[in-house]
Image (cartoon, rainbow, N blue to C red; front, side, top):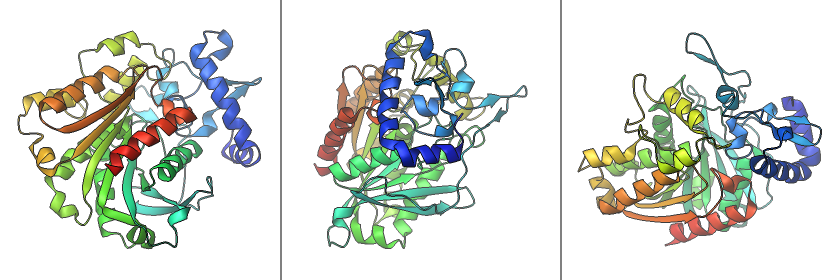
Length: 386
């Protein structure tokens, strides 16, 4: 098993080769039924390829070995379920704030900022180097990472650096990548509250970089997986308190492979029930641990379609504010039918919503497929610049 120091050493010495080799091994592992590709790690890394604590990765010969979520879902999530129902996190990442940031991409400048030290929440600002020392102001994108609300994902990971750096350069825009607390230690709506707090922090910020280079009148909320769920729910909240956030003005929501659910299974969930990235049993466990105690998967936090259909006025403020929504997904994602259903209901209610649904792929595929990431960046650029 990699220790943190060993992983840091490898990153410094062989980062490029490791990334390439890992991508090849990962794609082969997903497609192969070969016993040598038995999966033995957490969904941190599976659903988006290194979205979290890389120290859990181990090597066997020249192959990456990962935990099969259908066999050991808790191990796949990077947690241990105790007899009393509580969990233990054996490899919880540690950090101090603000952490010094390395130049993972020469095209961007990064800076870490504290949001709320009492909650251990922080954010990383990404700015294109080409605008530093210029008079230009760029759109502001507030990014919420994934992790099913449960996994100890942090914005401080190399793959997430690449994701944000690519979007920053391609749009171009300023990105504030936000951290939030995990469940079940802090069940929903804690993550929503933390991300909403980050918007108030941005509104009141004295940070010179944001004040100088970010156009607060053109702000977008972008989220991946659970982060897409957060972007949706925070967006609903923002629509009702928009005046309180000025001069920050949220113009749109970008739901990237949004993590939604429901008691009734969709066809895509059943078709991909044993998916190696987001299996049905893992999804159920994350909802069990993430939702308020006693709630089922038809809770509004999980099933927005049911809430929209039961509350005729839910989206009134969204429409009045002219909030636009972009939904991005692929038919290799078990959640694709959830996205299609939500898209349909939003359109029926008169919300300005567009989609970018592609063939193939898998949940979080843009994190390890450079071409898909580039394609996504162009879609986001068009949406932000419209």
